[in-house]
Length: 84
Image 1 (spheres, helix red, strand yellow):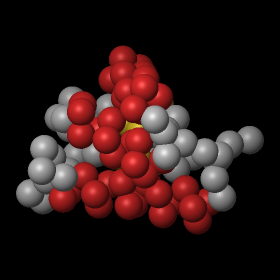
Image 2 (cartoon, one colour):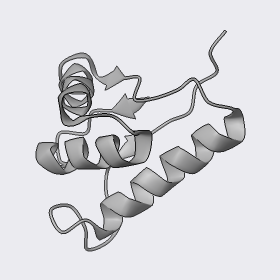
Image 3 (tube, helix red, strand yellow):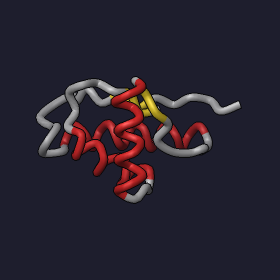
């Protein structure tokens, strides 16, 4: 789940979601807008637990290095939730 944080640059988020969860720009934009409007949105999957945790971790680490976001810990939060 992508969580809205009101700080992370929207264009950078679209780029990160598209890259790390393999979405096209239009789908990534829709995910970012859904999180912005509703507080959170599913950003990929379903994946196995290990893959989901790795994807979430890599996307959050990439946010720390992204020129529009980076320079240290980013407020970006992507959580892993079990699908029943």
